Image (cartoon, rainbow, N blue to C red; front, side, top):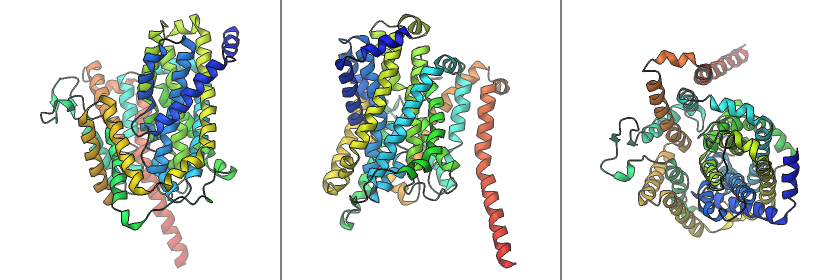
Length: 501
């Protein structure tokens, strides 16, 4: 209690509050730029925080982390160019809403879902950190393999109307994940002599290309057709009925995001994808998903923001980063002479409470910015197409290049855009490709590590309760669409028989 009161007194300092607000605004702005995620921003800011005291330094990075996760939804909704990887799923329904003149409603729902998910994860972090850290500590390569397999089992229903096309896209994503050096043998695969591909294809340039690049080409092909602009009488924030409609989805995604964020190296991207899939799976009417359903925004936004606080659990309690951004925050802690792990809870409890409070303040702050700026952000849709999309393409190119300062990533982004443009013409969705690419590497590496641990005895997988649980969930996920199809066919037959009689 004394540590909490000391942290609370520290937050009476205007300097600390200003630092958090600056981090929040910077996170929203950086997160909104395609490819320039909060991970990149925290990495750039880290050297500057070394001259600050530990509490303001870590509070600044934590606020930027929370706000950057929400910021990616802005351009995902307005111009179909996710500013950050976790916002990729938000674009599926957010952009169609913006095209219908409901950008303000989409941004408002994103803000509300994000703040609820963020606050939920911080509460989980405060209340259940010791218990959750022990659960995360039990995850080894076999558990990661089973979890990734469960994620891949969702490809058939993640987006689009054709399960077969989704599976083909997911398989292509997994194939892309095999490019690069095999970490067990050291052999280059499918690099064709390009050393830049030895480390594999990162999903960020592919994601930017499939979304921003593809949309750039789509809009270029429609220059003579005119453009759908936001009707400002229709630009409004979601009402109580909309919140009630999405409340179950938000609650479900908060749990999903917190659990996924807790697992080291998973992060908000996987949480958002699973959150979107579960929102669609549990919806009675799935017909509007991909066409502008608010639940398609609430699900991934609540999930990816719920993953932020949970990702801090293994970072603070075990010294194991829960995501790429928390890896940088971990580096900041070490740079300030702090030891993550049990020592952090016993030696510097004031710093821990300061981190909790800064994340809470950042969540409320970016919600305020999201609501206050919803109509302002929506005016992006009024910028003439011939100016807007070339600017988006330039930002996308910068985002692809900035990650590793590699021109190869820019070419990958361009090729992904061309490929996505062709796939879109034939009814394929980008989401399964992205998810296959993200999970493909994790599936392969964790499987190889597991087989080495088990001396290539597959039956040892069945000796681990967590693995068995995820394998059962995987089978259920694969069988459930067939059960749903069978029920639908049976209902159609009953309806037909009733009409005939």
